[in-house]
Image 1 (cartoon, helix red, strand yellow):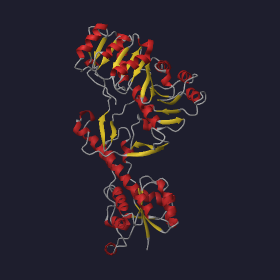
Image 2 (cartoon, rainbow, N blue to C red):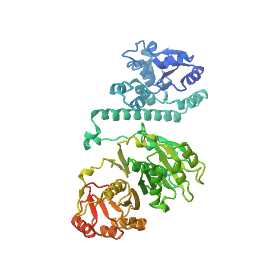
Image 3 (tube, rainbow, N blue to C red):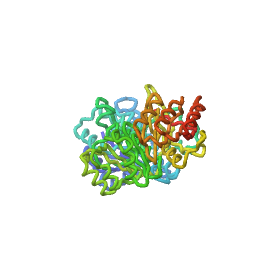
Image 4 (cartoon, rainbow, N blue to C red):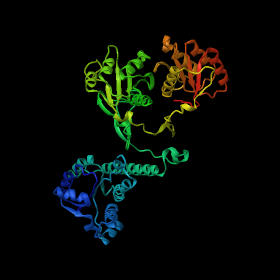
Length: 525
C-alpha cells in the first residue's frame, strides 16, 4: 500500500530536507499552493491536493483541503471494517503522516498599523481542521506541527520505532498549537468590538477566561531552592514588557530576579525626568529623579545603602559611563539592571571592572520609555484566579484637595507628587518619605500603618527633617501623623476617607503640616 504524507506549511523552515527523508522512506507527498512550490523547487516530487481530490482550489486559496478525500484520509481507521469499506468505496487512501503549521496570524497582528481585514485573512481554516483531524486519529496518523519535530519524526520512522507514547506527544503539541491559535484570534476579535477605555466590567472580564502562555524557559528554582519554576511568555508580548527585554550579559535570571526587574520597570515608567529605582524583595528601597541619570542613581542609592546591596535597578534613560562609574564604586554589589540601553563604554565597564562583573544580569528594553502596556493582572488563589486592571490610570491631580490650613509650598508639592507616584509601588501598608525628588525613607508591608511610619522615619534618620510623606491609604488614627511630625515631616499626601479624617486634619493643623487628599487609594498587597 502507498504510504502517503500530507504537507501544508506556512513556516517552511527545514521542510525540504525533511520531505526528502520521507521520500527515501517511500512516502508519496500530497501538498498545496506555496508549500508544493517550495518542495518542487527543492527537488521533491509532489502530488497536488487538487489532483488527488479532483476538486480545484478556489476562492483565493480559502478552499483547497476541506474535502472528504483529505479528511477521510486523516480520520479513517483502516483497521476497522466499516471505515475501511467507506474509504475503499469513495477512493480515499489513508494518510499516514500530516505535516501542518498555520497561517501567521499572531505575527500579522503584531505588526504596527495592521488592518482588520489583513488580520482576518490570516485566520487559517483548513490548517487547524487538518491538524485536529490528524491529532484525533493519532493512533493511525503522525501529526507534525513544528520544524523542531522533524528530525525526531524522521529518525523514528527510519528506525521503525514510532511508539504510541510518541504519537500522543505529537498530538498533544498539535492541540496545544490550535488552542493558542484560537485564543489569539478570539482575543483579537474581542479587541475589535470596542475601545478598551469604554468597556465596563462585563466586557473587560469575560464570563469564561482561557489564558494561553508558552513556556520560555525553566528556571534554576523558584522563590526558594526547593521549589521548581519556569517562566512563560504571552503569545505576542508587548514590546515594553519584561518578556521582550533583551538579556545582554550575566548569569541566568532567577524567579526572584524576574519579579524585581518587573517592579523596577514599573516604577521608572512613572516619570518623564531621568529616574532610577532600587528594588529589594519586590519593594523600592530607593528611588529618585534628577537632571541626570547618574545623579538620580546616587540619590536613589542613598535612601537605604544597606538594603541596596544586592539590589535590582531600573533606569528610564540609557545608562551612561558616569552612572557605570558610580555603580562600580567599591562596596556596591548589583544583582541585575534593566534600562532602555547602555552606552558602549558603560557596558564595557559593568562587564569588566567590578568584582561582580561576571554575575550581574544586564537587560535592555528600548520600548520601556516609549510606551506602557495596558494589561490585566492575574493572581492565583487556591482553586481560582483573581483578575483586575493594573493600577496605572493617570493621576487626576486637579482633583486633589488641600484639607489643611496650610497649603504645600511649590517645593513640597513637587516632592508630594513624586512620593505619591513611588508609594503606590510599595507593599501595603506603605509610608514613603521624600525630599528633593528622592526617597529618604520607606516603610513597607507592615500590618500597622503606624509601624510603617516608624520604620520609614528610622530609615531616613536625620534626612526626615523637612521631608514629605506619602501614605498609600488613609490614616485610621492621628498617631501616624504624630509619628511623622516628631521626625520633622512638613507635608503629607494620602487618599483620605477615614472616619477620623477630621482628627487627622486637626493634628496636621496643630503641627503646621500641609496635607493633600487625593481621593484614590493605592493598596499593593
